Image 1: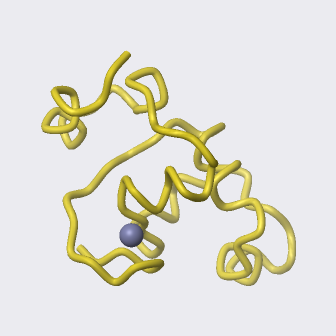
Image 2: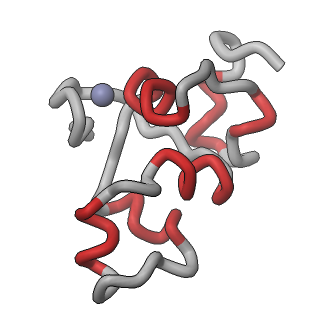
Length: 84
Ligand SMILES: [Zn+2]
C-alpha cells in the first residue's frame, strides 16, 4: 500500500472516524469523491485513499495514540509502537 502524501510503502493503519475526519478535513480528493459534500462514513474510502502513520500525524498535528486506532487486526503491529 502506498501513502498518497509521501509516496512511501507502508502497512495499513486504521484510525477512528473522528481522527480520519480531522486528518482529511481539507482533503479535496474526498470531497470530490462525495460530490462536494463531506463523506458520511469517511473510513469507507480507506481502500482508495491511504496515508501512513507519519502523514496522519502531520495532518492532525500530533502523535497518534492507541485510543485513536480502531480495534482491528490490521492495527495489531502498531500496538507496540504507539503509546496509550
Ligand atoms: Zn506518508
